Length: 316
Image (tube, rainbow, N blue to C red; front, side):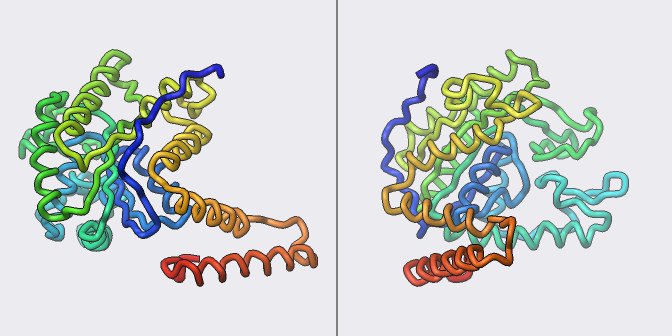
């Protein structure tokens, strides 16, 4: 083999189709969350939009716990758009009313989902944060405001560990069955430069390692190491040479599945993957008898799955 395969230690965590999973963090949290949704795991992905730094992720979790909807005091107008420092631009709008509607509609669902979640998958992207000078708070998104509005600094390992120790203890009290899987995004923040990117990623890795030692409910999945070591070739990167290519995301998803899914879950996942492929099939001759048989066979598969797994009733 012309690669160094990353060894993933056995884990006690087992994700099944009965679990509810929330993913929070960088673009990679989006990737893994969507992979789970594609095969019908009950998953809520980044209800605040993509989040990059540990403090913004922690703040978002606190907001979900407190379950207080956003008001006009929590948004601001920049040029033509109303925006929130807690959200990505996906929630922005040309009116304050629409902006709050976008935010709170998504927030209500996420806050309710979070109280039932069995797994929280957190992906750190960078240790660099932007603090708004006016409030002194770390923002999730600068929304292209001038740099003079913010102080940019790199979090320390101790700062991250301290913040997350308090958070995890709170989560253990409120949601004792909740398990946390951390990962570090393999996406490189090249604008910081190669050296600063590595320092940032190392800070995140050291903080997670410390949290693992402190809490039994915390696990680590080495997405970062798989991309950089096991897939050490630019053919596994997108055209920007920074983001993982689709084939790399697929491979990391495969390693994630092998790590956290037992034989029963893996078997059902394969059946559902086949159904998804069948439903997405575009025939050359849709009027043919052969395709009609194919459709009937697919419908039979779906009926059987719904009969055997009630949670699929409103999904397939």
